[in-house]
Image (cartoon, rainbow, N blue to C red; front, side):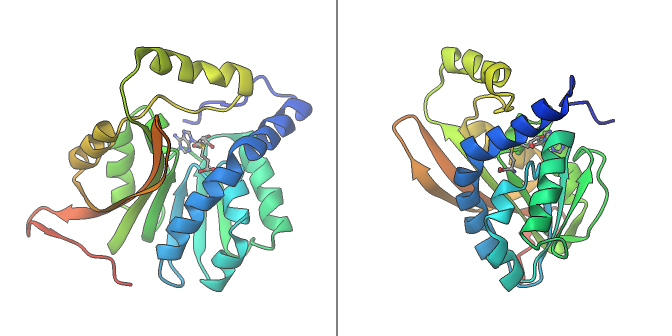
Length: 227
Ligand SMILES: C[S@@+](CC[C@H](N)C(=O)[O-])C[C@H]1O[C@@H](n2cnc3c(N)ncnc32)[C@H](O)[C@@H]1O
């Protein structure tokens, strides 16, 4: 079932939520999308978990077209998806990107060559469940991609304050995320990291890109991505 992320709704408030997200974050996450989309082979079929307003993907429109990618973006936020659909149409991406109002836990599609969680995995109530479910929709050579900010040091105060930012900005930033928790979620879901790079770092946090494969339990081997 899809929780109503945007209630109470009014047209003005709905539009402002998406606009605000794009003003504050899409510029940053567009760089993350570019780093991930660049790694994909041409004509890759991609599941974008939590596509949001689509502001990041539309900023990468040329790359999406040049690689002829086919992206399915799922999200539970109706306001964001409305903005996403009109942005995709303005960017001429309707043949490359489709959207679906659904929770990652309910989505069934694929097979996908890539499943991408951009700033969405660690705000989910059950990251391991989402990974396990998404992994069933990967093609045999598919990979999972993640872009995420990790805080360096544990702080009770920041852990308390971060979820509250939502009440002011309407943006769900999720909980404070630490690298060890992310890595543990991958292991618990039967995934193996094949790449982990820092995209940007400050004194307090780093934005990282991670790539993972499904561990072939019987063989004990990684299933590699066919580029
Ligand atoms: C921080 S935003 C990231 C948006 C976009 N991927 C980006 O990087 O700019 C996280 C997104 O995940 C979505 N989300 C949260 N829970 C979800 C779920 N259960 N299934 C699908 N999307 C979800 C939110 O609605 C939101 O749009």
